[in-house]
Amino acid sequence: MKEEQVKLIYAQEIVALIQETITIWHMENENRSSDHVIVTDQIRNIRPWNQHRKNMAQIVQELAATNTEIWHEEDKVRSLQDDVVLKAIRNINPLNQHRNDLMEEVDELVADYLEYEK
Image (cartoon, rainbow, N blue to C red):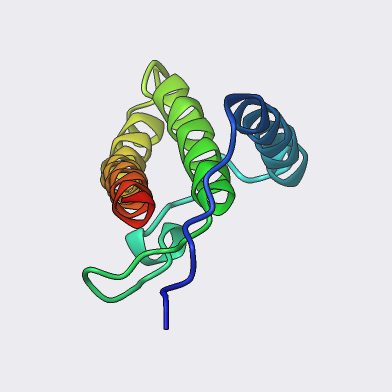
């Protein structure tokens, strides 16, 4: 039995997903407290090593949301309030790790697709 086929998407779909995800992120987070603390477990879907999703759209959406979160935290680093800067820096570290994990997942997905197409 063949494995479930990898579902890749076209560049136009990626752009539309990113725009939609960023818009939704802003709507959902417009009233969020500036004291919001991000914990690694809150931003990642824990999955066993060497297992990943087969749907590029899901990964792209999560990557866009993570990047948006990082950009907003990086804006806070320029604050003149030390406590705001410290919280932002603490938030950026797990977000960057999550972004790296997502990019590795994209790499795995493309490699799986290329293998499947052989």
